[in-house]
Image (cartoon, rainbow, N blue to C red; front, side):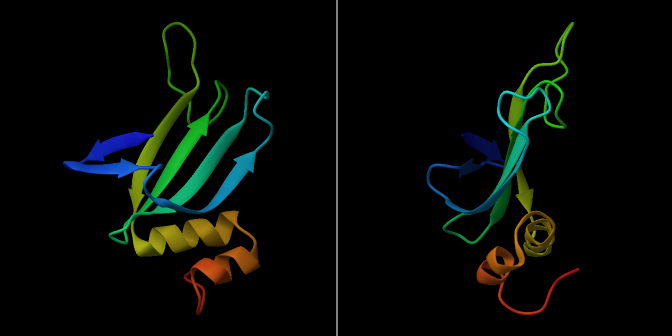
Amino acid sequence: MIKIINSVPYSTDSSCRLGYFQHRTILDPAYHREELYITRQGTYFLYVEGRENSPYCFQGDPFPAAGCDITILSDIEARIWAEHRLTPDECEFIFPGPKAS
């Protein structure tokens, strides 16, 4: 996915995925997935996708539909996301040093 934010393209294809969190299976209406990426310039962003009963659905008319989005994260936000969504070993590998939260 590519999304342009403030005239800067953010692409899941050209960035490095650092980790992901998945809630339920893809066939479940509450399924959602979050993926943490870092660009070549060192900017973190979160790619999210979800089905119709997830936090990431589009509120369509008359029914909600599956959706996806990209959100830029600060260094601290990325680290906090990782601390809450990844294993301690994965988090330590990506962000060595003391915890942010």
